[in-house]
Length: 469
Image (cartoon, rainbow, N blue to C red; front, side, top):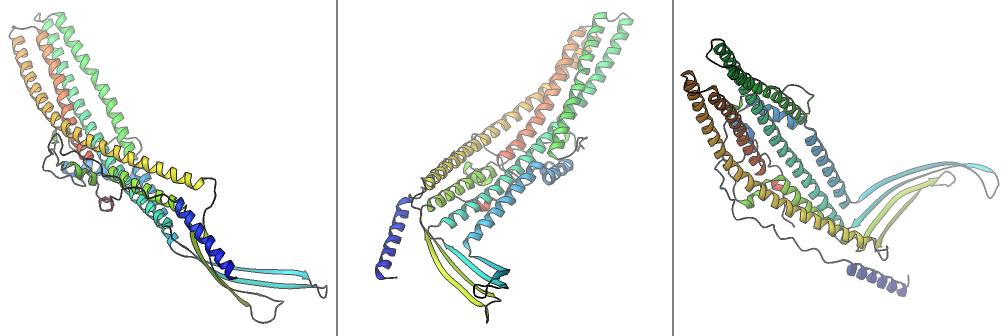
């Protein structure tokens, strides 16, 4: 190559590099951290949120159900498979940082006509070739793509933990609903037996002339009204068992019960900590943050596509044929190539704009998830405190109505009041007892929801969460 040709080549290479550098845009600015409230409306307690918070209730059946769900639940298994896929893709992307080595071998057997003697002859050829190639990451594209793949893998791990957190809370809440229905069914059956006894006594009093037919009809109507509740509760129990079996990946069937609802006690308000600590505890927020990190890296990789790429190649091998005399020939080559995009119809720049739009989507999703998490915790803290007050009032109302029923029964026996007073007291007491059971279960379920909102049951990915954006 003459000096003029060398100078022209250098000038062309410099022009290509300059055009590629001009085509690349400046890197995106880091996103500011999300704003956090100074404190919660309702102060939390002192009990820490543990990774296995449900074991604090001391119900072995609940522990076994959650362990079974963690082992068999379909949603959790799918999340684990997505995590395995993301990790494999990250490993595949990491391989782009290393040279590629290939070995090629070939052979041939041919019958041809000699140009000299015009006679056919047989020839055997063979070739063995060892090839190596390496792309120099001048623009940082490969490194950015690897960062994106690793962030996606960590986001998949956080999403898997988010599914696990949601699963444990859903199993616990569903199980508590089942215990609530069991308690309501037991109360209904006791009330039915009491109403039936009252009906029999009223019929005896009617036969002896101490009660009217109206009182007997009212007693029978009250007994049948209560009896209507039993099949409704049985149907609700079957639906709740079906929901729990689905979470456990079981076939339809009965669910084993542990302690009754009356033996359960709320653990107390868990420690909520500062709102800023929620960003490090909740797996869904970690997943949203890591997806933003991956979008940033993907944008950097798309911008790097506008820059030239440098590729180094080398090969070494042997080739030979039976018609040649002597040893096989050794062949080799060493070279490099520069590939710079000049015109592609705007495809690369459109990919950069698409990556920028995806980054904006990830940023918006992260901000929305953060606000939703703050709102959820604040709402659950307020709801838990108010639910405890409601339960106290419901228990007090139940006690007062039980006293009113006893008084109405004594007054009726003494002839100072009609059966209608006793009937109203019975109805009011039954409704209050049902409400007390509902409030007790709601308080426990609210505690479970608060553990979920605070990020309980998760802790594997916290050390890997990054704050690059």
